Image (cartoon, rainbow, N blue to C red; front, side):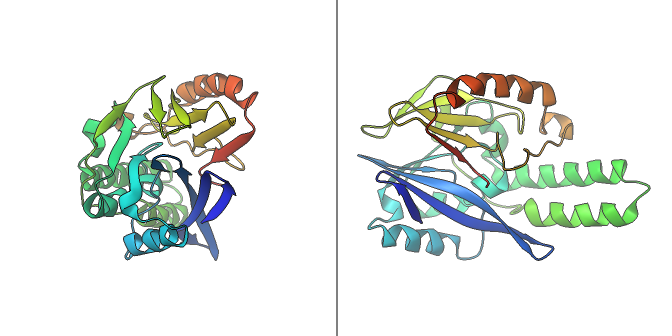
Length: 240
């Protein structure tokens, strides 16, 4: 973990190895009266041991984390919640509309995997090599297809999450997924943007029976984000 501010730690976790390159996801630990984790990163063998070691180096353990906030339920953000749900008593939070779809997390991931494969197969019917390549990525990314994440609280637009001196405002900004949220901390100008912004562009996969991306929603969310970006001192995306 890298302490980027006295009260904020960045933890970068690898989640995909393709073409000789490693993709990372950023998760964030807020250190205040309470410890709050923003996203868990992906599930993997020994995940809990790895995150526990990282916290131990900072003088904490997973038992000290009171809340885990998910910016959205994709496996590189929420997959680790399966293991942490068994290891800790942390309260897991996600947007209210997501809860009924993602608590049975393995079933949600399996559904998304099958929908993505079907979409690529349909659109790449005349390019079987590319279809196989994308199917390989889908197989690697949409994992694990088992487990549950017990959601203890449903988040909604404008809600304030108090960590102590720091207060996080929930901003509903769908587009990348149907249930994306960002988090705004006014005092220090912190803007946790999830997958709304990336180094090049966010990933948009439309359709998927309503579980995919929506370009119109994404456009509206970008407009909403403008007023926070103008005031932000730190823009903290999940990738890049």
